[in-house]
Image (cartoon, rainbow, N blue to C red; front, side, top):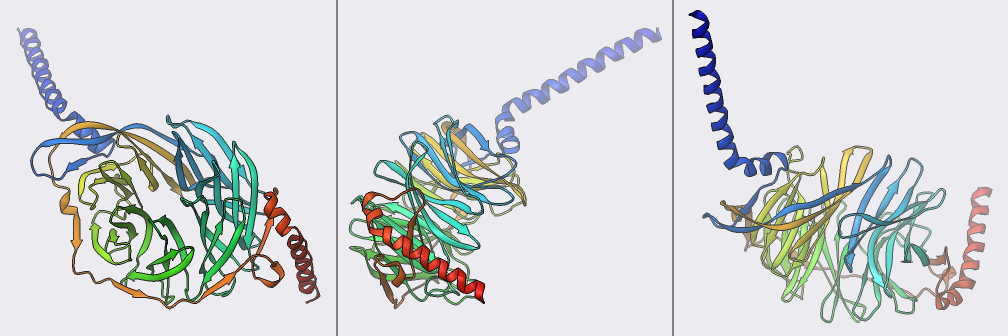
Length: 477
């Protein structure tokens, strides 16, 4: 009798357990996708209305990393004919090499290219196209003195490369190919002021000649971030530290026919550092790393049209798509599992979709590009203080139902506390034709184009003689 009771109770307990598990599975089945999105992939999406609607959001098509026992850093990228070119550096214990990676649309590495020499440090900072080839601008450092390095690369071979510098330091070049075929180059230089980086500009014309060079005097630390071409102007957008107290302002220099037209600064008492720029039909959008605002829009005369702030993090890159703008950045809380945000907005930066992703550990996004169907994002993952890897992710559009309000995270400032002021600048012109009478020199590592080779052959020899004399003087001291 007791045995029968035990068997019956056991059967009832099993049935009860099955009913409980079935209920849990049924409940979780309805909520499984949302649970996975939020807790596994750390991904949420929000549409702007407080009612349910169909929202186009992104699903992960692939996520891939590139790394080794050394540090790999990415600084810029360019998409050409379904090929993704990433430029950065590969750091070892003794030196760093310039790194150029070519990914296909599936995220596979088609080619790897490295450039470096013993006792030198190379970094690729910027990339553009020139004469149907890739032109990489970067830094080359020897004995703590940096110069600007330009290399024209085709099919993983160097067609020519040049070094532009002085006996001081030149850093952080930005290169951009203009509609007329010339390449506009901006960088920071200490050639005329050993205590401060001032902004310098030069042009590489279609024949491969460096035409002239200008240095804008007066800054404490002026460095370029982006070059954009308008209908009849060129803008160099950078940051400036006018007073040397650590606070940065946005610096904008407008060129007309390659000559400075006006210079303006935009800033507050806090830190404002531009991160990227985008030209629109009625103005220029600039994303900004600042505690006060995230994006501002200027008209073509440099006047502020509006300023907006995204509360959850700093916008590091923006790009245009057919129906609006894509914006990316790290979220404000470095300890949160959601390390990366992706915003889709209209042309006035009103958010339509907001998404969060966590692919690995401590992602720092660098660039974004999209065609309306696929979105590509590149960046660096920091695993510890000594180990970085490059990552690339491709997102694909999917349709889902979500309900929430993303607009609450955007603030629009109409009465801004920003100050816009003109700077009286002194422009110092250098025509690089006689290196012993100019603080700048130009020489070749792999061979210059014919026009440059003839022009600078004698000057290269004079520079070598001058360099030998300098070394002898140092030894005698």
